[in-house]
Structure formats: C-alpha cells, structure tokens
Amino acid sequence: MQYYNSIIDTIGNTPLVRLNRINKGVKGTLLVKVEYFNPGNSVKDRMAVRMVEDAERDGRLRPGGTIIEGTSGNTGMGLALAAIAKGYKCIFTMADKQSLEKIDILRAVGAEVVVCPTNVAPEDPRSYYSIARRLNQEIPNSFYPNQYDNPSNSVAHYETTGPEIWRQTEGEITHFAVGVGTGGTASGTSRYLKEQNSNIVTVGIDTYGSVFKKYKETGEFDEKEVFPYLTEGIGEDILPANVDFAMIDYFVKVTDKDAALMTRRLAREEGLFVGWSCGSAVHGALEYAREHLTDTDVMVIILPDHGTRYLGKIYNDTWMKDHGFLERTFATARDIVHR
Ligand code: PMP
Figure: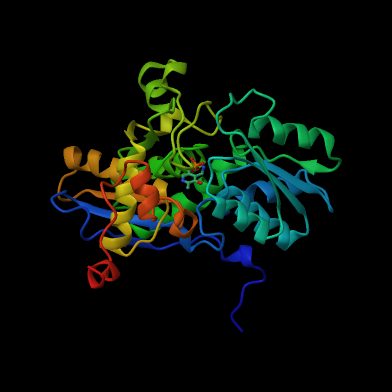
C-alpha cells in the first residue's frame, strides 16, 4: 500500500514549472517553484514542522503543550497541521491587515486566533509580536517558536528547498529569486545553493515600506523607510535573525500595485493561481532578469502560496478599483447582454 502516515509527511518536493508567456522578451529559462502544492498551501509548512520537531527534540515543547506564534497566516497553517499530527493546541496572533480568509482558515483547522492592530510599532504592547510574547509568558507549557529568530526556520530550507532546487535543475541554476519576510526561505535555500556553486546569484524581493533593501546597501536601519503597505508576507520593519544578508546579493523593491497586477497575470497567463507575494517575486525577478540574464541562464523563483487566500482582495475587481490598482472593472458577459 502506498500512503503517508500523516498529512505533514506530504510536505516538500513541490514542482518546478517553466514560465511561458509572462517572461516574453526576457533571456534565459525562468522556472517557478510552486509551493502551494504543500498541504497547508504554502512554503511555510516546511519550517513550521521543523520548528516543532526541533523543539520536541530539545524539550522546549512537551506533550499537551500549546504552540503560540505571531503569524500572517501561512506559518500558522503549517503549525496547525503539525499540531494536529502531534497532538498540541495552537494560539496565533495576527495583524488586522491580513485577509479574513487567512483567519477563517486557521480557525477551520482548530487554532485560536487573536487579531491585533497592524499600524503600531513592534515593541508596542498591542502589536502581534508583543501579544504573542505575553501569551507565551502567561500560559503554562506553551512554546513560542518565534519564526523571525528561530534558526530551525532557515535550516528547514537549507535541508529541503535548496537540495530540491539543485536536484530539479540538475545543478544548472544560475539565479535564485525569493521574497524576504522572516528571511528563512531566502537564507537557508541560498546558503545550500551557494555551497554547491558559489556563482549562483540570489535576488531578494522586498516591498516599499520595508527596511531590507536600504539595510543591505548602506548597513543602516533607516526608520524613514518604514510605512504601511498592503502586500502580505514579505518586507519587515525589523531585522529578523533569519535574514542572512550575506546570502542575498541584491534586493529589488516592488510596489503593492505592481505585485497585485502581476499576480493576476500569473493566474490568467500561466494558470498559476497564486498569492500576492508571488506577484512581487515574479515582478522583481523579471526586472532583474531583463537587465542581467543571458540565454543560457536558469533562474528559479519561489512562489510562496495559493490564490484562494486573496480572493477578497487582489482577485476582486472592486477591491482593486477601490485601491487604485485597476482603472475600471472588466465588462462581464452579463453587462454586455444587459446593454
Ligand atoms: N510570502 C508569503 C505569502 C509568506 O507568508 C511569507 C512568510 N512570511 C513569505 C512570502 C516570506 O518567506 P520567509 O518568511 O521565509 O522570508
């Protein structure tokens, strides 16, 4: 019989798919690693399970324990799946800018979700970082993975995402493009790839409103770079320990609008129904590729999650119009029939 012992054993070994239309006029082969094939529909399943298993091994997480994390949703889903498989409870704190779908999805898999204000400083007691820390202090036998600073996050990608890409490209990869949030995917994967071939170039994708690009270029943490933005999952107003700046050669910043429009194109032109930060990654990667790639180059771009979580936002024409991202909603067959 062929079966997995539990759903978390299906994590990883996601497919690599060639872009065929969106990269028109760009030299080289552009491949996307489609992380929504993971059971929690995102790249974060990989590190969530790894954080739980490392904590079990060294006694930070004991039977009957509660996992508490500040998460934009995807890490929460991975942690919730790990918790179900292994018998733990979950409480997540989330910023209120996150999609309602993400909150509902976490509740669907049995987690408790505490929604916190987005536009307060990380050290503010109301922030989702602070609330997660406080719950961890007050709830006995609780474990706070802290994905930002927990080394298991990068290690998961060093041990799975990196080797998969190396194997799938038969060592032909020359460029790696990846959105940076906690930095785990970028740092761990890039470290593995650069150990195989130190010429591989890693392009980190950042958002406007985040500190990463300026910090890479000047070594300065510039608070003037920080302002609210809408893209979910990438960019930060802190420097997480999991961002290893030595593993990221360049940063490209992408606006909320460019990312949203590119995400919609990925769905319509490539059949890749993916999340908002996937549009950021592809838009930023194409900007870099247009200038730097040659015919023989092979670029791999990580697509972190699935489109369902963004149906009420970037895939909704009215929402797009209200945010100034679309000039008008498209005419439907019904509009034409009633004209
Ligand atoms: N995109 C999405 C949708 C995410 O949830 C995350 C995780 N924060 C990322 C990109 C970035 O991944 P990482 O945290 O590994 O940098």
